[in-house]
Length: 243
Image (cartoon, rainbow, N blue to C red; front, side, top):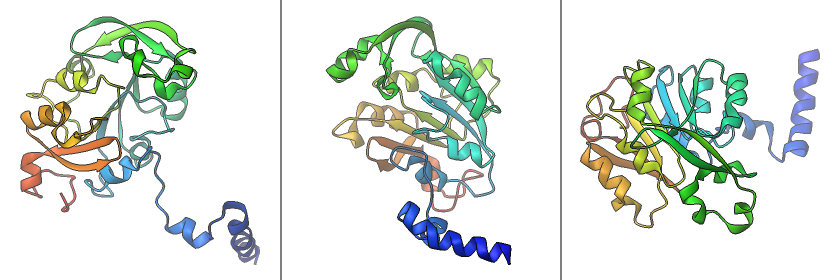
């Protein structure tokens, strides 16, 4: 009886508290991404599959995250971000991931990063002109390590990447170019691309040159899969037959 009473109360109160019926809440699909990228990328993998991701420009362990839903499903991987202030958040909310404080680029060394009160605008100092002026006034310049993606993969002994996510505020192509494509070929790549002609952008053309095909577009994110998988749905374990 107590459980029935609780269910009845929940059904009565839920529409008033959340503006959704309990049935709608149960049938909905939660996305932690900004534009549902985690749902789109999740279609490529079987429900029970537990893979490995690399998240470059991870920003936050949950907020606007394209990899947190994968983490909740048992995936693990590497989260990389140039903001030193989020290390504690990743340690708390994603303790089984490896968090690396670094910027990613085509060479190694140090780089000046602009950090803002609104962290979604964080970028390399040379990209500050693209930030709204009212946000720009809150900038804090910090120097952070600069590494290539390939060097981080090697240092972490990464054997295979199932999902590579890149959101680096204008430096996304540099991140892609810093990978060693002879060693690491992710099954799915999600990369931010603000180009007007995103299907023929520098990013799209570069990924095509290393064997990838554009599969989905989610507002400002382009999602790629290897061309041979696009042609043959059964070419890679873990990918659903829709690929």
